[in-house]
Length: 174
Image 1 (spheres, one colour):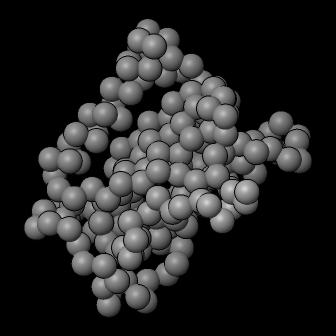
Image 2 (image 1 turned 120 degrees about the vertical axis):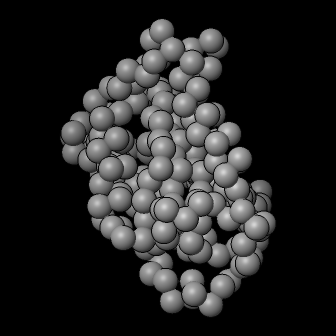
């Protein structure tokens, strides 16, 4: 059985992920290996690989300056959570309901400003820098995909921020 053909997209069908909006993403390490640090007493302690992750995430905003901002992020031992804002960071998440798909405004937006392009660029940058750091050629660091959620209103934004913030303490209890 060909797994490639059987894979179904986890993206919302028909939604334009370059639209202005707030997005929650989670990117996991391949095999959930704990490369980026450890949890001690409910706090995340960053490893050298975790420092690479943090630096690359901060560079993400610089590379896409103007149209992309980051709100809140948390590096965990085996995954990464972040809130990305495409468009005006002072404009709250869509409060009036679900945004229209394929808006005319977004048709002309650079493909590098999509949620997928941001996640791919970040994953690629982290992998490349860790390969150089460790002097290895072939490192399969990340799971193939990532998880994302369109943040629909301020209440959801608040819940997601709390979830990200509490994640190290939650993981410490396991």
